[in-house]
Each structure stands twice: as structure tokens, then as C-alpha cells.
Image (cartoon, rainbow over all chains, first blue to last red; front, side):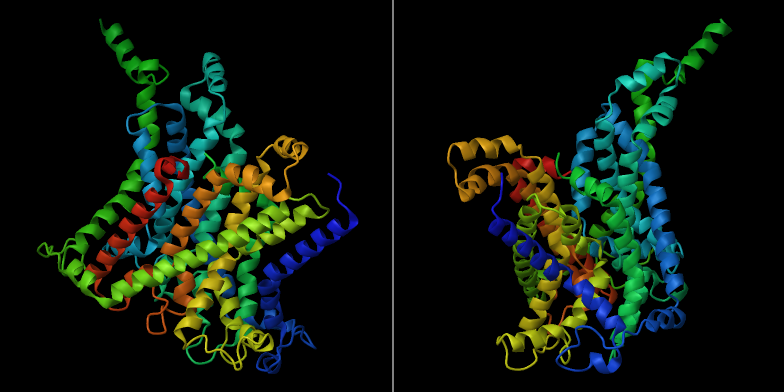
Length: 276
Length: 308
């Protein structure tokens, strides 16, 4: 399939135009952060500040506990991913290897869990957590995010285990390995890319949460996650758009970096869930 | 005698024995089942139970109120609920259609062979990696009533003769939410469609070309039918996302003005945590869940298996 010069030109022009449209909001975030207040509150808008205020990043970093927010987001994400993976890996393996009563029902359950609105689940979880005195603690997020992660992770991991031939474990067991040993020493090492993809995707899910953090942690500023912290910078009357944009850059960068460098794994996770 | 008992006992715990294999399966799945029972099933039962009680702020272990369907009668007779249903429906249709249109076109574009294709593909799906709250920060400023870029653009392009009151006008606020959601939602469609497109063997296109099929014919009779299964699932997942989304609407408009952007999700949350009517909130949430289940089963039909 050879393209003519005109066709190539049209293709490249379309690609560049589309990219520009899609990425413009991200560019605008950066421009807003770097503009002076005068440039922001003026029409026509400034498309590139005359004197980029690079110092704003240091100023916002010092003025707001951004590192603490990021750290809390990280703790909640690592906690919920670790907890979920622990139970999901063995459950996914069991669903893949053993025909069990209720195995098909499990699929239906995962489907329902995917549809469960967080705004519904947050109501009983709030009562449960408050009666255990957990409100305000990061543990609420670890558990609440697990409700999103466990069903999909179990199913996704089952899919990965299905692609690994059973004969490998049988060979290991003939050589004297126990069933658990065969799983841990033979199957899990082979499934590492699958495990990484699932964990990574789960991490992004947890990092994106706002509903649970807002409900459980709003009165404990020490435990605010990045997303919750950012929204508190939105003033009721005045919002300092350059400050909030600079803080947003800090919070978006970790996930965007994960995406840019590990996109292969993430996309594998996204599509594995739906292509079967 | 003792020897055989010992041997028998040892064998009972010998999980390698074929007849014990199932037992091992159940042991491996038990932690997940327990976790799910504790943090999903039990809360869900509590929520359904709450929706049948006239309760403001529930205490666990407190005396349960008598069974009552008053939350549901309130719900179905309140204008607010039907308005929320209408807003949800509008938003679901517009955002899903918009995301599929943009997502499918970008996927078709990225499926071409050209230099820098990997970078272009990464860039086109980048909004997927931007956390929803950050997307809202960006768009809230672009939709600013006094100095926002979109208002200024609308004037320059002749759509409006003055800045658009994005916050106080119902229509404008609705479109602000819809546009933000499409920007955040289309990359998922794009990623899924691209994966689907790449699994179509190029032989099909070559054969069709030999037979003289035009670009449109190839798209209509090869690409579309083969992409349909992936597209169907993607459509339902996007629809479910819009249906249940909380953060974008809550932070961008808070459901206002005059509830013009209040979807069922937002109504559920506000009934509970703003008006402290947990019983009513649970009722709205349960109805939302039922609608979600019915809608996706209807759309997927027999293929509903493909979603999990």
C-alpha cells in the first residue's frame, strides 16, 4: 500500500491537528501555571506567558502540603493494591485451575460489581466505618478501593492464568513439587507481566478516586489524598488558578509518567478485561 | 493399626491427591470470597435494607426502623428524581456518542502506518492518564465565566456575542460537563478500538481490494462487523462510567445550577451527605444500580458474558 505524496501530507496534517486538539488542555494547564495573575485575568488570553513564572512550582510546593497529599495517595494506593492482589492472585488462580461449584456465578458477580455505583456503596461503608471508628483514617480508603479492585483483578488474573498451560505445573508436581509450590515457583514467575499489568491498573484506579476520600477523610487534613487536597484549593469566591494549576501538575505527573513509560502493560490490562 | 490411621490422616492433608484438589481450590478462593462478602456484599445488603427504612443517619447495631416503602414512594413522586433521570439519560447518550465518535476516529487514524505512530498513539490517549480531578481543574478554568478560553473562543468564532455564563446557565453548565467527560472518556474507546482494529487480519483488506472494494466499502463490510463485539463492550463500559461518575460533575458544577447537571449518582450522594437522608439516598442508589443492570443486560443481551 503505497501512498501518494498528497495522501501522506493529508495524513500527517490530520494526525498533528488531532494531537494538538487533544493535548491542548494539558498544555493550557502548564500555561496557566506559568502565567502571572495579570496575564490570566485578561482577554484575549495569553497563549504563552511573556515571562514564564517557573518559581511558582517551588512556591506552591512550600505553601501547600503537596508532598503529604501525594504520600497519602501513595499509601492508600499501595495498601489497597497489596491487599487486593494478595486475595485476587490466589482466587484468580483457583478459578483458572479448578472447576468449582459457583465458578460461573463468580463471573456474573464480577459483572454486577462493575456496575455498582460508588455513590451507593459509600453510604453503608460510611455507617460501617463510623461504627468501627475508622472515619478519618487511611484504612477506609484501603478497604473502599479494594471494593473496586478485587472483582476486576480476580477476573483479569484468571484470564492471564488461563493462558499458561497446565502441563507446566503437572511437570513440576511429578518432580515432587507441592501444588502450592508449583503455583508459587512455576506459574507466578511466568505470570509476572500479567501480575504487573493488573497491579498497575489497580494503582491508577486507586489514585483516581475522589468520592471515597472526600466522604471519609474530609475532616482529617493530615490524611488528605492528592485529589482531595487539590479540590480544597478551589476557593468559594476566588480561585488562584495559577496556584491550583501548578499543584495539579505535581499530582498529574506521576500517573502520566506511569502511562508514558508503562503504557504497554496498562493497555494490556484494559483490553484483557473486555476482549474475551 | 496406628500406622494406617497416621497414614490416613497424613493423606487427608495431602492436597496433591486428585480427590483433594478441589479442596485446595476452595482454600485458595476463600480469602477473596470473605473479603468480598465483608466489603461489598454485606454493605450492599445494608444499603438495600436502609432504603426500606425511614432513617436519617444510621448507626450500625442501632435498632432497625420498621419496614417502610416511604423512600420509594417519595422517590417516584418527586420531581427531583425524574429530573435527575432525564439529566442522566441526556448525559449518558451525549457523552457516550461523543466518546465513541472521537475514540473511533482517533483509533482509525492511529491504525494507519506512519512515522511517529507510537508517539501519536500515546498522545491521543493521554487524557486517559490525567486524573479526573485534574481534568476538572483544567476545564473549570477554560470554562471560566469571565476569563475562560472557551467563552472567548465562542465569541471569536461568532457563536456568542458575549462571554457565556457557564456556571449560571443550565444549558451551558450541562455542555461544560459533557465536553469535559468526552475529553476524559474517549481515550478508553480509542485504546479498545485500536486493539480491536489491530486484531483484524490485513489479508481481508487485501482480498477486498483485489475485488475492487472502495475505502468506504472496506470500512462498512470488514472493519465495522469485526469491530462490533469490542465496540459493543466498550460502549457499555463507557455508558456505565457516565452513569456512575461522581467526581467530574461534583467538582465542576456540584450538580447545579438548578439541578441541571444533577445525575442520579450526584443525587444519591447529596441526599446522604448533604441532606443526611440516608434512607432516601440508599433508595436512589438502589434504583440507579437496577437501571444500570437492566440497561447493560439489554444492550449486551447474550453477549453479556463478554463484559467480564
